[in-house]
Amino acid sequence: MVDEYQRLWETVTRDPGHLAFLPLGEHLRRRGELESAARVAVGGLEQHPELADGHDLYARILTDMGDFEAADEEWRVALEVDPHHPGANKGLGFLRFRGGDLDEALEHLENALAAAPTDQAVVRALHAVRDAVNDAQLEQSTDPISGASAQDLVFTGLAGSDEGMLLVDQRGRILGGRLRVPPTGDVSEPVAAYLAGATQEAERTSRMLELGEWQWIVGEGPSGNIYVTPPTDETLLVILRDRGVPGGRLAMLAERAGAAARQWLMRQSL
Image (cartoon, rainbow, N blue to C red):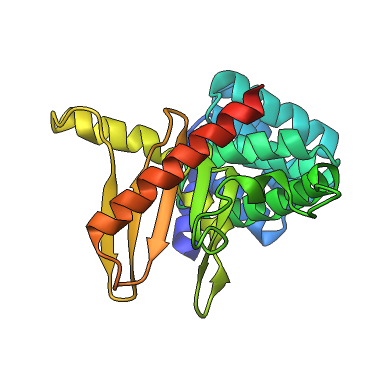
């Protein structure tokens, strides 16, 4: 590691515009040498002003230094260069959440997850923001008579609607239902997060294999079966049941749940 660090230093010293400034700046940032990291980042950006990764690096350094306003500006520049940059979206999501703008924080984090679906830091951050958004929405949408929120009414009357059905949009936002598995408990949020962009991936795969439009995906596991289908072009429905429920019955249940979801979505648009 020392040799690698020294090699990076020598490379950037000879050529401040060399892309080695990115790993070197990150290395210095992680070591807490923020002034040196900032000088390296600025030197690199002078040679590469249109490099989104460079602005993202500098923004993270500025955040560590407590200069959130300047970090915000750097991340916005990064998004002007690359609107889908995961680091910039993650950073702006953090700043917006810190500033209390939950809707914009959610949008940036959803964009970050779509670009980097395996980033656990984004998943955790998105989970926290969604919890905050759901709490805020719950205060506004609770039915004073029944005590049920609008999301709880999507699958009203269907068996297992509170533990084995989940409706999400293309960004992985929960629209209704819940998924619970023992002993973990409620896994709705992480499942919804991982489903972000799944519709596009399924469509892309179907086109590549010349299968036509995809209609459903069935998965079988040692502890249960899962059925995924798009009730509309912009949503995904997940049905989870134990191993004793055959695929045919899952399909019938998904058809009923999909119809209920479409009716609910139509009512929301009125």
